[in-house]
Image 1: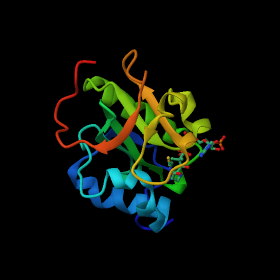
Image 2: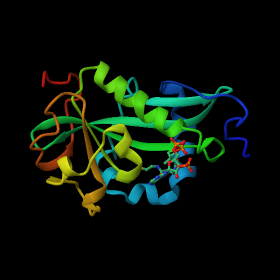
Image 3: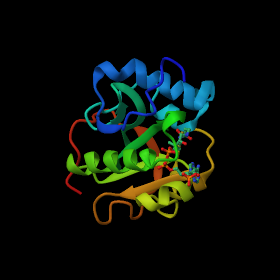
Length: 180
Ligand SMILES: CC(C)(COP(=O)(O)OP(=O)(O)OC[C@H]1O[C@@H](n2cnc3c(N)ncnc32)[C@H](O)[C@@H]1OP(=O)(O)O)[C@@H](O)C(=O)NCCC(=O)NCCS
């Protein structure tokens, strides 16, 4: 295991990301995705912007970062939404349900803060058990080439993923979620 990785024997716990986690989270994302992370269409929604640190979730083991799920404010057509990602678990901690737990915690944090909709780009077979599906997101347009079947949406409020259509853009005023 590299010195930048968490101790695989330590049981991970999930909590909010802290500003002091930034370097360790970036290192984890680099290990998980490599330089290709910056070519992704979703990255066009993140570059030059800040994620919502208080809603983003980190898994820690023995004080080190073992996983992350970040949330970013976007708009999906006319609808306010959050974009989930990068989402990664350190190799040493995979296949234990930690990824799923991070997704559940991030969704709970978003719902608790009043948000109604989460988007991500990922494999539907993995994310469907957490309520994400491609069908509701099929008319959304991301800023770059993407397999439309990997654009997934989850409504946190009834109807929030109904009739989604239009461009997904970074949100310029992320502070307060709307009432819907
Ligand atoms: C995806 C990732 C976060 C999952 O972390 P994890 O802690 O292993 O997740 P879980 O333990 O909750 O689930 C693991 C299961 O999901 C399955 N799975 C993982 N990626 C999958 C995918 N893309 N499609 C379908 N199933 C997938 C695995 O086969 C595994 O099953 P197994 O444990 O029976 O072998 C981790 O593999 C990772 O960091 N990958 C690199 C970064 C990445 O691809 N992130 C997602 C981009 S949207």
